[in-house]
Image (tube, rainbow, N blue to C red):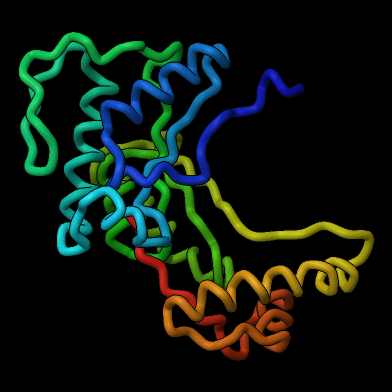
Length: 226
């Protein structure tokens, strides 16, 4: 039933956003949806948002760490004093409203393929959302193990360390039909993005190898994520 569907973004690019506004927007959505909103906070796979909003890529990691800290503190405290490097300080602020229906409002950490990102999610005890954009899904297993180990060492239970996975896919009557219909759009999009990043053109051979589950030559895809 649609009234049970969770509502979230694919990823909220927190590094280029204001945590106060992000929280207010999702709290409003949570109220409207009667407690079905979730935040997936990440750094995204594209870097265009940084210069667009006046941020430097030299502060790539610092921006995310600071803004995630503020977002988590807003979630836990209705009255907040906070000071950081990249936004104005908050001094005994009581007006971060509305407050969501859910307490706490779910905040997932959206990650790509960086080990530090998986370990960070585990050490914070945040649920993990893995974005599989290129390559084989199974290669993420060691990183998920790293997440769970970091969470265990930080004192979190297995039940607290939830894992979700986003992956490209297509469904048709047969596997061959699905591949034939999906490949043209897949190749066009990833080749276009690859040109922006100096990566080679996507080939049918690479696509077929990934579809079989063992790649002879991985599709080039470099991701900077949280």
